[in-house]
Image (cartoon, rainbow, N blue to C red; front, side):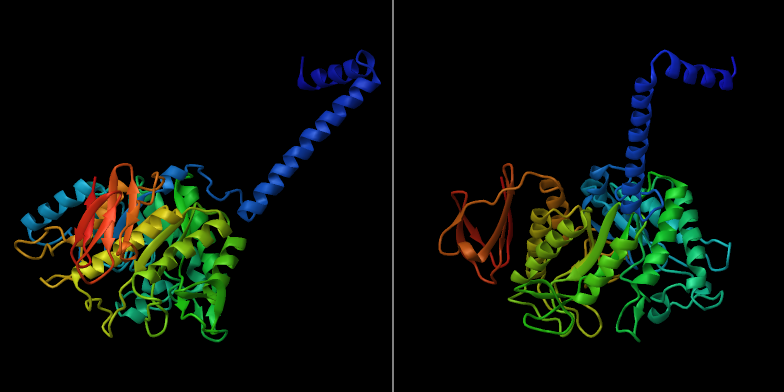
Length: 465
């Protein structure tokens, strides 16, 4: 019997045997199902911007909690002396930290110097290095080839050119490049769209061009999901700049003893969130010091509270896993170098920041590794692999590695009992039997932690348990 015959027999049975009232019930039930379906579609449309990709589409929050890792910059451990590279690779393999790399700049050549002509030699090498030595590779989709931003086929590596956004007419070309890269590295699942809104500031309106960025983001997001629905995509990677306490200049209600976040960054975040077509995680970066004059309030240790306050606000406001793509605690000099603090001081302040990350529920954070080629390398993770005896680990690598193992995202945290006259001079965090104590003073002191007496050197980081 054909489909038409089946339908006719069904309707006749509905009227003649079941009776008119039963058939009416059937129609009502069908209407209820249809209404429920419409509600689901309407809700999904609201969450996604209407393109069918809900926020956190893959539903795997654990895959977004990568923990504490670092970003490769101009110089890394994929080049240099063979023995030094092996030494560094052994350390990184043991730490198993997530690693992040940009697709152009920061150690990688122009991936598409001419339309449709690709150059992935450098990026292939960096991705291969991340695969060998890290736990999870991440790619930041920045920056854009020159021909996409008004230049020619020759790459201009000046900072002004590198940090220029693609022209709107080439947004689709940039999205296509992102798709080609995702297809080339099918094991890479995590993608960050652009970097710090570079090139998206509107001087005429004295605010971020968040409409332009969001348009670019949506095109890239769609292309990455088209390549593989399992790809995880996040943005907007905007800097949570802050102003001093009491300042009225672009001050927002997101504030603390450290100051207030710039309202223009808050506006950009809210616009992106309202108009994005799906996101798996939210990305920001920032510093504990003020946007102008690089001041630390109340001091360099207390100012790190900003990272917890901002993270708490982000999680509450946007309901997405929070990633910090960069985080800074030491003001830079005129050459953008951070070398005015001693290494123990520097590492101790970073340790307090990691504590705030863990307590406030950060899912992923990448330390911007300021790797150099010589002996002098403040804040670096390892001694330069350009040196014959290089590749050895430095204090920041030890901190990141141990913190990642002791306090991964989701760990059961507790605050140790700290007593004694110096209890306010230390920061402490514990999980299970592991306790981390940081001396926030540039002097030796004694403190009681969970009943144990600890004699701490100036700015010492002490692991117990």
